[in-house]
Image (cartoon, rainbow, N blue to C red; front, side):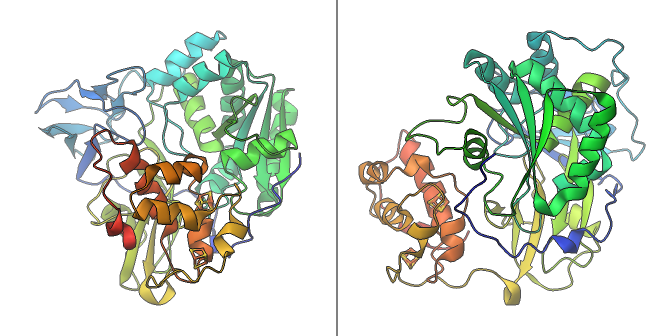
Length: 441
Ligand code: SF4
Ligand code: SF4
């Protein structure tokens, strides 16, 4: 592999949630809220009614279309409310498993069968935006991918969920990786891990010595952000930059995360749908940062309480990492499948200050790993000029957040670019200037 040359070594603060490698299991919250539209997939359709009893893992909503996945309850209890966009379930705190969850006697070997099982279990991409994995697998076979890269880099500061998952469940990740390899039609799997997780790498290698998955190898990469991005990983494998407009898939590479491989293992081997995942709760405001088995639908406040709450008033609470995550307005927001962590930052330790005018220093241009001109893209968005933003290749932006991180004027560039993409894509966009995108909301 030829690792990422651009990118930066960020202060990572990972030690805060790595005082032990344990994954804590908090008690279920009383009420859980399941949004029908989760992450990047189309909304699901409720298949339960109010008052109905459900178990842990019971299906509560069906996939509405190909690019959609079903939803499953993460507690046993009763459906109390079904609204246009969500289902609310009251936990009985008994945690009774749905009888359908049991070890599978025979593991299928046909790619289509495996993709169907993964779809039925509601598995999405847990290392990115939450796209449906079965769609990735179908596209990968159509493009005849050669290599599946499993991202174990977790290069965002503070997040350690993937790291502890690799330490606690290397066998399950390897088995999930082999399933993904067969289902995607890839010839080989490379599990990519950064140098600061060598003990996880050693565990994966030693477990694979016994499992004998000969097409699975590991690779060590330097600690650089955004080492774990799809583009950086693909370029590391290829040993060359992707061409303009070329996607990783077109170059014969599918990238999934180690967390997704674990979820795929559970779906195929245990018939267990995706209703929980490992999540890091950390940041300068959290009293006892931890990695938790977080049940989907749990409010941020309940997971923060499981880490003994706040020790400083939070200025900002984020779903995801500090570079690519999104701020949430209320602590009652429930977690969805694609959320790898909850971070709470106090104002005195906040990484970002009050926005000022661009001083044209060019730092954002120097740091962009995709060689864009972020300052010009932001200007085009704010002036409501989608064509100009396209000229500056807004769609090539991977939303890594480095330009915002480096900007001495604290311009929230990645927020502006992300929202600019949404506004320009929206059909009823009046192409108004996006001046409102000047604050970190
Ligand atoms: S880093 Fe910030 S201040 Fe410097 S050119 Fe880019 S947008 Fe302007
Ligand atoms: S423009 Fe996009 S890809 Fe480039 S540094 Fe900013 S967020 Fe990252």
